[in-house]
Structure formats: C-alpha cells, structure tokens
Image 1 (cartoon, rainbow, N blue to C red):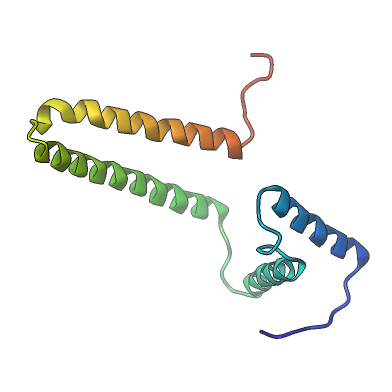
Image 2 (cartoon, one colour; image 1 turned 30 degrees about the vertical axis):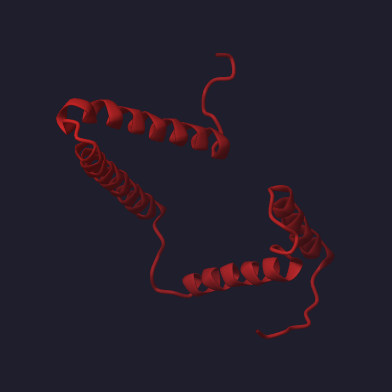
Length: 133
C-alpha cells in the first residue's frame, strides 16, 4: 500500500475527522475506522466520480432505481419461494401433512419478514407521515 504525504485544508481535515467520529458513534471500533482508511475510501469514491465524469456514458438515476427495484423484488420473490419449499420439506419430514399446515407457518414467516422490513425502514428513512396525525 502506498504512502502519501499530502496537505489538506483545515476544513477538509475537520470534515474527515467528523466522519470518523460519526462512524465510531454508530458503533464502529476505533481500530476499524481511522483517518487514513476514511481518506482512502473518500479518494476511491472521488476517483470513481472523476472517471464517470470523463466517461461517454451518462448515469440515469431513473434507470438505476428501476434496476434496484427489479432486483430487490426478484430477490424477495425468490426468498418466499425458497421459504415455501423448505417449510414444506420440513413439515413433511415431521410426518405432518404439509398442505394442512404450510399456510399457517408461511403466514408467520411472512409477517416476521414484513415486520423486520417496517422496522428497518423506520430506522433508516425519514417518515413522510404528517406530524399532526
């Protein structure tokens, strides 16, 4: 790994130190996040942006969003399909009729998945509900 001696403006250095402190406050261990590793990541992202700026290709946020939604939706459907198959195999191995109990078991799984998604959404996204409600 190369070593560089560079000069940073005070404001940039302060912002990088703030990023490091924020990561530590979020639970990262000080040994895992450092000024050097943060600078390295920011330079890597800056190089990606620089290459994209000089590239003939244009970035379309709409296309990106469409692709992410398509893949996430497909992943969710695949997980439900696999969960159904594994549940049916499990119930059959217990000697129970899978057709009788599979809907009940899957309903519990899907409810748990939706609850986890809702909790994750509330932690990571700003609520769009009216504050007067």
